[in-house]
Amino acid sequence: MLDQQRVVKALEAERASFARFSAEQEQQQRMAARWEEIFSTYSSAELCARVAGIPWPGALPTRELDEAGKLLIPFRPGWQHHPDARGWAMGVLAGKPAIAVDGSQIAPDPIYSIPVGAIQIGWFVNPHDGAQPYVKEIEFTVLPPEELSETDGEMESFAIQAVNQRRFVRECERLADLMLEYARPEADVQPLSFFDGSFIISFAGKIQSGRARPYIRAIDHLLTVSRTHEAPLVGFVDTSNSRDIANLVYNLGINASGLPDVSDAALLRSILPRWGDRTPFFICARPDALSKEESGIFYKDVAFCYIRLARNRPPARLEIPLWLLESGQAESMVDRVRAECVVGGGYPYAIETADAVAVLSHQDRRRFYAIFDHFLNQEGLALDVSRKALSKQGRRTP
Image 1 (cartoon, rainbow, N blue to C red):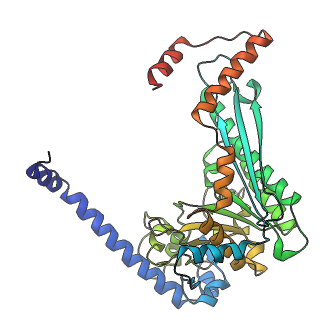
Image 2: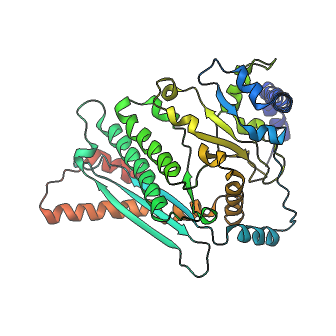
Image 3: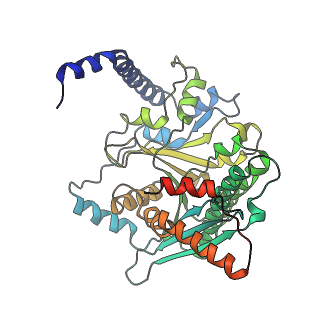
């Protein structure tokens, strides 16, 4: 039974918190209005000139801003109901293949004295052609002790990082391989390859340089394959906390308020009111540890926009290689992303399917270690089991 007086008292105790939240919301609305004013007043050339002395101002506007004249590029397809939307999507996608790769992993278990991990990479190729079959496939790789051991530092922490890194790199490699395998000479039917995440790998600047290099090489290779073979590629970030446009606005110094602790997507939520609406593309010029050390020199080869793909979430972030924007193909590729999201119910169907192919459940992980245990016994290899860790696992397993 709910006690009204206690509820009122508890709410009153948090009065200041609710007031702060309301004030922050009002500040965000004012900032969004200021963004709209800035980007509808100045041309891309004027804005770029204002930050010309700053190597990494956050972002750089493109000519799409001049063509739109504002931060909003509306999407008005004319359909009202989902069957109409699906019909539009199937028309956009017909005969245009989509490729996606995703991965899952099994981290080393501290119960076992022999460190072992594994990654599973899954991929999905959808030709969007009823006469051709789609492809769903996986590869499974075991990571042996020598890849998971380090003499310095915490071995368990290093092993988890090693598995994460191997998975990331292999996802990039497999996607690049598929881009080459399915490349077509006819530009209008080139497959669109989906990368589930951002090409702007700021996290790699926060780890040791030796561990960061494989991440950098993997993304650089992916972008190089796309550019060299003119293979369309898009990075999809469903929930982005990036602040690249916010950094640009701050660096412009046009009577803008101080740098807010709020993401681009949160501020753009009110500027992109309807499904499919997007911003113009910007060139990424993020100031982070990689760009400042010139390890992230490829950042400016990436263009990004924000796009509304769900009513109840902030806009998603799309990233494409800059060559795709400069070749005039950006809007057609954005339409293909929109169409994939119609089919996928708000998320690109190709990525969603690749995830389902690659995923390893908790039960799968337990089965892997049972197989591993049997393998060691069969090979006559010694295996020590930590009774303490085993006891903890037993208590925590429902």
